[in-house]
Image 1 (cartoon, rainbow, N blue to C red):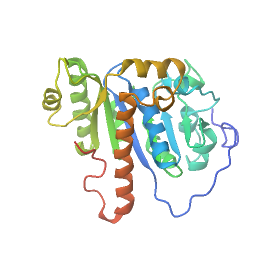
Image 2 (tube, helix red, strand yellow):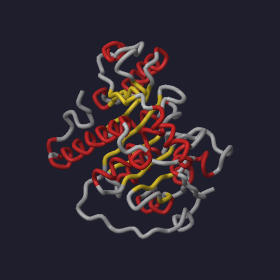
Image 3 (spheres, rainbow, N blue to C red):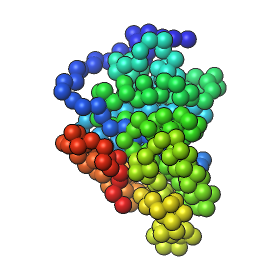
Image 4 (cartoon, rainbow, N blue to C red):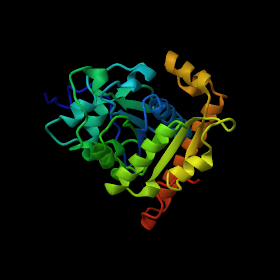
Length: 286
């Protein structure tokens, strides 16, 4: 059923944005269940808004679980499925009136699993690119939690995003899946330099798979590592608290701050040298 923008979510005041380039989009994929995709998405979004003091949008495309709403304690009648099913143009106003506010600078488009559990199938690729373009108009950063998308749909997002992150754990299965996912994205036209593996729950010592071994298995791509800080992560998950509140001095929170600062620098560089388009934009330094 199509809904008018006036009915989608509570209306919010939308300030016009003047002389501003479209924002930076990040697609986050998962190499396996429980890899930590949503934990990364919500905490990266939080650190980006703390770093930039500008609006960040989370788009939850996980049609199976919709964990973003649980993590951030959000409720709403409308979400991603309503935007993609809207029978008119998908524009910035539609995104603004459908997104749920978490704070002044963080909003979220909720998953079908959060707004109408059990009544929606997998996300289709047809209008993802249109939605992504609308999301970028009023948000400096848009982060897509795309844990269970088909590779065709994931490639649509990845091709339109500045960076695609693939979250994995340091185990053989996840590394193999990540390698296959990277190849599938490249086969669909995604530039390999825009893809970055995120090795979650990594310990510097006593890990069965070293960074060098993971890099070799992933075709020479150096993964970014997130600390194996289970206690801090689970405290946030269980109590719906971001790490900046629940564990501000934890090793994991410091890793998210570092990752956010890299994206902030890349986005600032893009805006400062837009006329020199294309060369390496989206690559996270090794």
